[in-house]
Length: 68
Image (cartoon, rainbow, N blue to C red):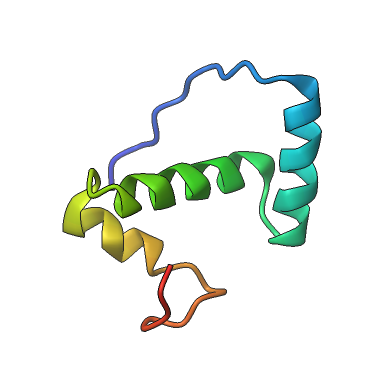
């Protein structure tokens, strides 16, 4: 498995607070939730392809047939 790419993300403090609360609601870290949202957006736009679909379906909160 390839390592993850690290980079700095600057974010408005108010948006970060929203992301913290949202991530907590989903039982994820802020970083994990941002990655989940970005992956989901890329998949929905058709930019990620089938390889990315498999990793999105690994979300334990969703059943394999559930629409994302």
